[in-house]
Length: 317
Ligand code: FAD
Image 1: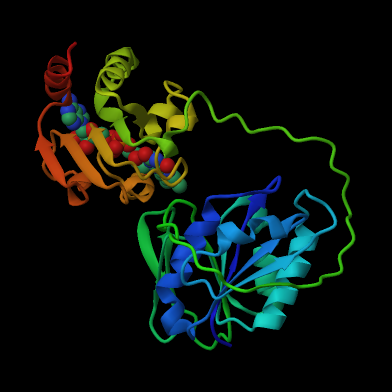
Image 2: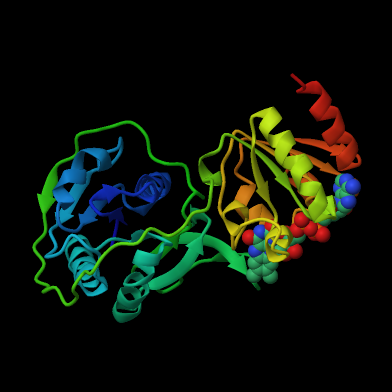
């Protein structure tokens, strides 16, 4: 067993962003895993994604055609099984996504592979070492897989840098027999709310420190003045003050803005899980011991309302 096999993901023929992140993560350990990285695209029209998947460092793109353009777990399971049989990889990478959860764990269990889901960091020490949350996200757990001949990991979307550049790896098709078992009736988009915080360059994020729902409009206005998008910690969503599309964290969105300005957020591990890869983190908190300062590039021990007033003045007009 050697090398890395990445299973790209697409929906309705369009490649999903997590695919390039999986390749990026795979390239990080490719050298130690045996020096080869293959990317597979599964689905009707899989061949149309070949160019986008041929990032620099990818050694081969494999395509598996499917009977339906819509996701069917048993088809993906059969394809993954065939790909593992053919490639014999030391490491298989899938996104920790709704689709991949429908077949990845089943294939790993059937083949007796090492397995971890919701992985946020990947290293190599004689074999893959995966980091994921434990005890409801209160601790980081490092997992290795002694005695396993292959390992399948599901990586959290947004937690790894996407692969860049383009090469021109060879492409080949893999034949898999799988009949469609479902009839597709229609497609309904999940409501993402009024905004996509994962795409914002500048997030003004507020937490329980704002104390009162009546304070919300002040921060909505401030965000607008500063050209920022408003995001929040979970208590504000649990209280029903803000829709969950704006929640950052383990059970919310993983964000990677250029600037993350956190006002009155303590920095619980579940919150950090969703924002610690932001380029620049600025934290304002009255408690100098608040854990958010442990990940902040700039920290201000101050009352957030004083800072908000000052910022509103600075950005006036
Ligand atoms: P608090 O922890 O109460 O912190 C408020 C902070 O504001 C304090 O540090 C305080 O010093 C500061 N403060 C108060 N007044 C002021 C002031 N006037 N000026 C400046 N600072 C002030 N949380 C998330 O955010 N996202 C998640 O996705 C998420 N998922 C979870 C999943 C699970 C399974 C579990 C168990 C928990 C999850 N949580 C999540 C909750 C998480 O554990 C914390 O409870 C939450 O992040 C705390 O939010 P907070 O920092 O806003 O509130």
